[in-house]
Length: 338
Image 1 (cartoon, rainbow, N blue to C red):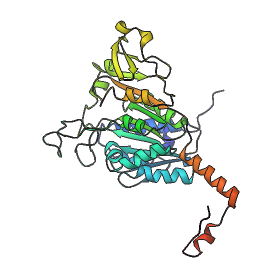
Image 2 (cartoon, rainbow, N blue to C red):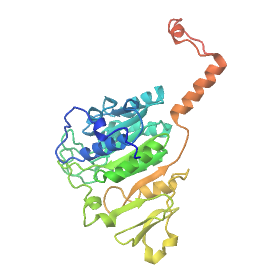
Image 3 (cartoon, rainbow, N blue to C red):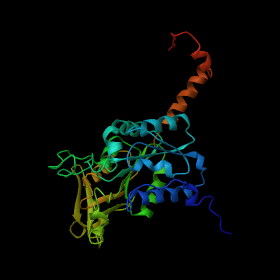
Image 4 (cartoon, one colour):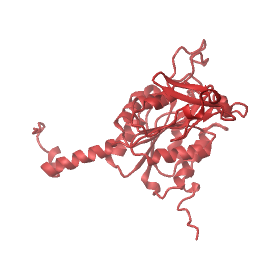
């Protein structure tokens, strides 16, 4: 007898009109997230979507779950409070390259380094879309936009490198148009306890169309997609003719016929030290040419919420449960004994 799924994708859709530009990559990401959540045996009320400001941040309106559309760049901070106050919830953060890496940069890196139990989905379209096409923290040097008419001079962020530098316990990258891989990456992040960041290359067909053509175009994608698989040597190319080696100097692309398959780097996503994963993230400084996709890092470490729970339990065991109402009604000066 075939077991019937508890939910369908339609159960996570709302009655709100989805208001993105026709052809926007956000539609595919929304469908991928809804499909993934439908595959889980988790109450819809246990999911919370927290977003900031930007095109992607309309996401909570379209999810039939709890959610909050917050202020610019502050989604990770608010999500930290939600996850800490109620660790039984599955908290998803929706942000973009402008929202998460510009005004929200500090909130993002501190949520990652604290290992707060958050699933952060970063929509990277390398442009400010909501405000009609200004260069963003991930736009390439020389990018001509309304705010950089002679070309951007800013060195762009590499979101994966940034997350690995903050030692996030989970870091991955995927493409908006690849629904199967996106769903796989969502599942891997959700199963990992702690702070996870999934960067999704998301096409903005109005203000930055074909930014990821090297990875999505039929003529070039096989030569440029470097799929990372734990425990497997890193091989890519239409006929598997290229590979990757990693040493103290970093990661480099080599020809398999020259170095031999046995001398290629075997990817270890579970390595405690993120150095090799960081080296892999530096192969590409954007979606230009060969670019790693998949899980860079997935390690189990104590999450921020669990650490707080243990501290509270230890304090209660030593001093009792306490009485917040009594504390608030007491004098203005409190004495805390060591």
